[in-house]
Length: 406
Image 1 (tube, helix red, strand yellow):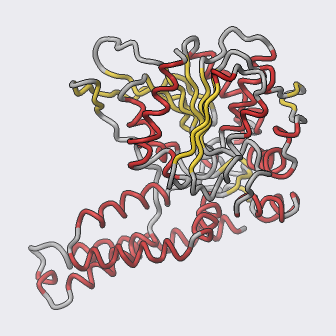
Image 2 (tube, rainbow, N blue to C red; image 1 turned 30 degrees about the horizontal axis):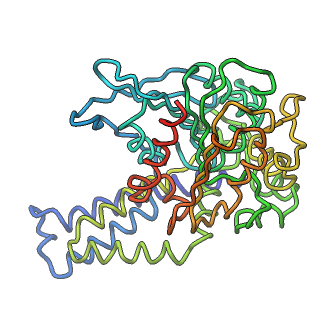
């Protein structure tokens, strides 16, 4: 019922937000007489803030048309390589002759936001690599006929993509997918699969959430599993292709994101309003771009979400050595030929210190010379894969690691 109420509210707010957007433009357009009235700038700023707080945010685009390779500017074409019910494998193909760059599979999180959250990650990697990314589908857009999607299915998807792109492949996982990616590669190693990747880079993920637990980890352990089943899972309403599918709705996830740092978001919106009033366009546009991405959320399949809560955050099956996928035990110690690089942020409040580094303890049979750990100084969770520190510090370190293990 909650999802239906949300949709009713959204339907009611849509014309109101369109009115607010139109009113904001009337008070800023130089040909409009209202733009020349007293306090026009403040009125317009108030209307735009109202519009952005209440509007519905659609999935953004990657909008990556070019990249720099050496001194040249190279065009980029976004192509779909594999289409699955719950995911597309995208390739950022460089136009022109084959540059023979290392091939990278970037596994994006399926944890509320769209894969476009890794836009800056892709941009940084594209300079020196041939980049593919998992583009997860909003569960409300997947018909019931496609069947369920479990955490095991995530592992199978990753394995399929690795086999599709191998050999000479390097896998990078950001946040949540570090766990299923490690499972996927572990199972392939156990089976002596000839298409193992050359390297795996784990960035800010909950390999062992028992280490330095954060607010996210505390929520998962303080609540019983039945609470998640009965409180945050709802069927998709009839106005979407996935009508009837049970999901963890994006709007609930977004509310949780905001609740973690309400003061910071309130201050950000206050600053946005003042930038609009003073005509400071650059920081105002930066605010728009950030929240266009941050406020665009997707629904997660209930099976996958609940599996993750139980397997990763409540029973710690990966570090405990008790996780089975399709009846087969996940054994990271069977990995011997895939180099491992873990990246953490010093100030990460999502995946605490040591949670990602735990992969080294589990992958005990990877030679020491093929293992590396890096803690980015003064870097929070999002700074690991986006922003100046990603571009100037972390991305070059990953590029160096890939080159050393190619």
